[in-house]
Length: 133
Image 1: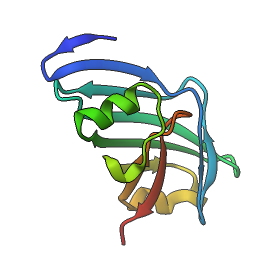
Image 2 (image 1 turned 90 degrees about the horizontal axis):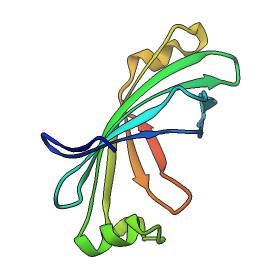
Image 3 (image 1 turned 90 degrees about the vertical axis):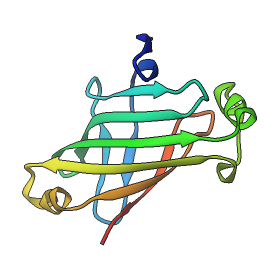
């Protein structure tokens, strides 16, 4: 916890693991390479600023950065924050993603923008990610 800063409460949260899988990429978060600089407004709206490094099953390394917003009614946010399971249709959780890599087989990732639709089950956040054509 950094504490109350210029735009609400700032928390720096390590991302300790995770996987990414889709039709053209499969990999995992590299240990010790990721965090979320999360700002929380007084109304409970969370603004994500996540930076992480992925390693593909082919060995390529990808830097991923995304920003996003998670918000809902005070009651829904209280349930999320207490670790309860909440139906994703009860809150708004969206992200915008960019990627950078020097791996030739993953160079296509340098040329896309992606959006994520998030959920926050008790086990941690998950995203359905879509490249914007």
